[in-house]
Image 1 (cartoon, rainbow over the protein chains, first blue to last red):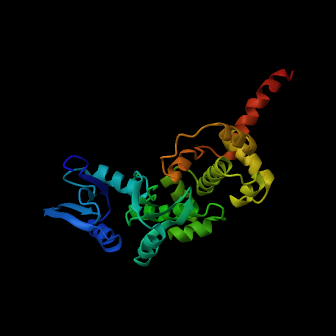
Image 2 (image 1 turned 180 degrees about the vertical axis):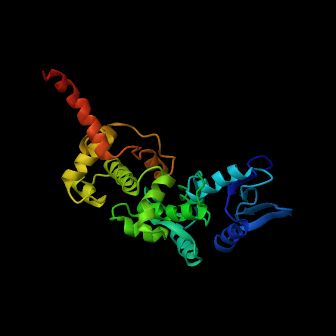
Image 3 (image 1 turned 60 degrees about the vertical axis):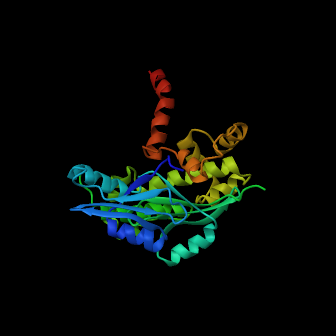
Length: 138
Length: 158
């Protein structure tokens, strides 16, 4: 595939902390980590999804003024950013592994309507729903 | 007004805990401990952050959950009342009607009759979309409705 969505970014409160979380605890890989003065372009990838990057950015200069950046930091910390969904093969196994790694779960795995899901947050407050992939009907 | 994102993140944790177990009791001291703030500051900080007081937020989650159980299960209304954290069926029915404008039984009948086209949306987001927007206290809502009802009779009094 050569066309499609390449990067979607998240705002995080601290890029180093976010890197430790997404790579160290969730098992993502660093795609690009480029610093230019204060600015740092940081993207990570799910190991099974090489065509997509998740950007981890801090709101601030030179892109945003201080007041706007502060507003965004508040919005992220209040968990008001849009929902994120991570699809996994086995929700309960992933939950156990991630919980041992210190991931903050906000909902334990629940099975409903033939699928299992759980919820967790990154350290900044971004909320993820983790959904078990529905087995393809054969 | 500038708010401390670190504090907001801790307040979010209290909100998350209510979300995860809205049927449980959440007195201010318990919530304040989760957020690691003093009881005196908790309720005000929470309202400032999320736009409504913590007990009312909990109420919206309980009603949301009750609506979801009424819509998607065959669980009896009595069991739903207790499963969603009420101590009496009467309080549940009255509060539910005050918040949503219809009784639990009426909502169930209406929802069963309607077809749902939301099967492709993850369940929790569908549920959240049905969360009541409780921008005033239930007591205030009751008072306003009572006034609306009482208004015509007042005019008849000489």
